[in-house]
Image (cartoon, rainbow, N blue to C red; front, side, top):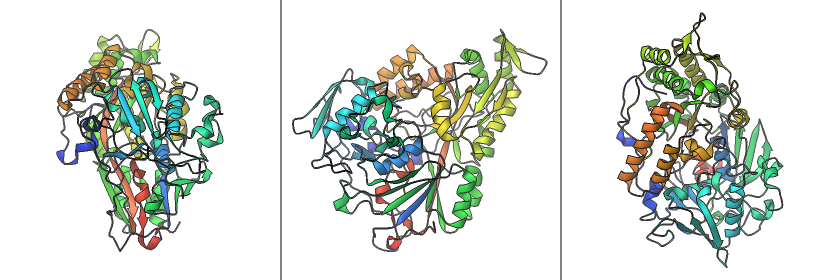
Length: 568
């Protein structure tokens, strides 16, 4: 969604150094261990124990790695699965169940970037005591590439030509069809962790997501394991004594209860009554109310995400680029940020926020908010205004469904503001919102024109700016929910994926942005701040910018005297 004026991001929030996977190709970021500093007043030594209660804005739709695009699912999966590589609150990547981050320097990445070797720690086990080794990694990528499993993201896996497991099963070497700089991101954080071969090998790939393991995984590897799964109510995880860092007294907590609230108003009431320790992705319209909560600390971080209006090109009217361009020109970003977000966002018109270096284009040519120009564009494209003020052409009428996740006050405000402006250019939108579990699965995945025409949500990429997953032709219906395809763009994706020099890669991203701003498969509106909150007396609550986000370091969370303060 496009802006009235050009804005620049503040430079103070740029995430640098090991944040970009490309730097790992030249020199590995050595594992930094587990941070122990606190975001709150530290009342003494770290003490283990306690039950931490966290409110989830959206209901998870799957708790199986790479089976969902939903961030809240991936947040819970960070508790359940130990990934090969793990991020931190600064967006840096560290070794997880591997012994080191691969690089050209340490020999784990070939000079041509087509061969990658991952070395696993010895003596790893699943929560049921069975060995966790490179066979599980091999099984996982084979499963993810199987269309019957319907993985949420295959844009990286598709580059694998073959793989070999070492005789001791402690390493796996991947041979790629072409150089692919962002390969590491396919294996970072719990949402992309290996699955247990011994548990799923005898299950048909198409049945795995239909099984009870989808929301109650019984064999896991992370700091916690599932204790209770009550969809629509809560998901409880308890300490996993077989976690590979258990000897280091991790996790610190005994238990985490993820409450599937699904309603921002309920979350605010929970905070007022002190029954939760934390919540993330909060409603910006309620910032004044959050600031009045003396027993909580409000946290605002610039996110990696972009909030956008997505166009379903299965709708014949939306195949007309003039319609998409006109709608994007009728979006008043400044008002959306000021009114709906209460200022907690930055104007953005590309899919890369300032978190991505390379990726972010500071001087991107953002189209201006201009109702007159949008009307002229539609006039020239042959869209005639009817007696009811709605434009028509060749039997098609510009009356469209506009949807987002339900019970989200600031997104509903976005809808209201956009709806009024769209009507000024002869585009009538009918608002129909859905629970997140429906929105991010059957609604978007179904791609049914007339049901899904315009949809608003926030997207980001993993720990690298590679954006093929959202726009590549081969990701249509998987993670490309715009049903948009441009072969020229696909060529640029290949080019940026094979480019290691940051400056050269940025130039390719600029070309990608130029095409996206012309074709408008999405209308990017702004870069929202991540708003979260944690109760005083809790420690190490440090949401990150990518993938697991709120829970990226949940194994390090702890509470004063081993007792979490929420009254539950």
